[in-house]
Image (cartoon, rainbow, N blue to C red; front, side, top):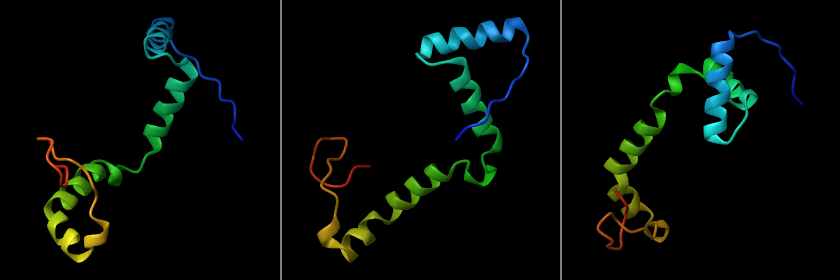
Length: 85
């Protein structure tokens, strides 16, 4: 379920939104909806993905040793079998 919200923006801003929407293949409504989601996002989550990737990179060998049957079958950036960096 969704709610309708009406906002007023200056014509110049609307034109910029429409131009960006056209370039991205989306709608002005979708752009504004995403902006609203970002406005209410918990700031504690900022950078969480980077922290998680760093944790995994630093602890990959320990996880692989503890769970050898679950080691991902990925290739590193050089194309060699093993854990991707």
